[in-house]
Image 1 (cartoon, rainbow, N blue to C red):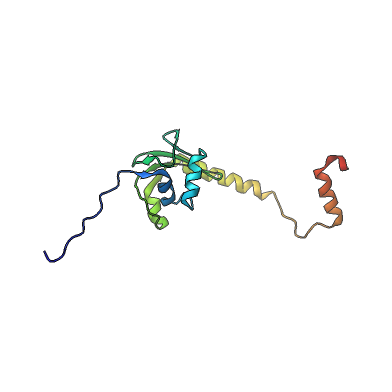
Image 2: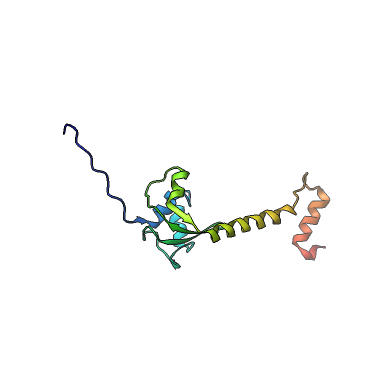
Length: 139
């Protein structure tokens, strides 16, 4: 034995919730993940969690990020942020959650289709009408 073998680190039994959310790329920074947990946007098994809670494989999470809602099961643990392809292996999203997100996205797109932004800035008359809409008594 001329070379000493470096023992590999033991597999992790648990990871902090905020750290896992950051590593799984649900939030851009760890502080945003912590803030989401503290404001109740992340639930573990139907209960509100703490940022320091130990997360284990098999835990069910409900995550609210903006207008999107995710229901995922933890399939892997990591405390380092890696590429998105690796981050997607850390969780499995339920089929119902994925369909609900796609339907909500389609509804938002459909709602936007009716709105057409003006091609030019409003002129003096249009600005007065816009201002009057804010104050009904001005008409």
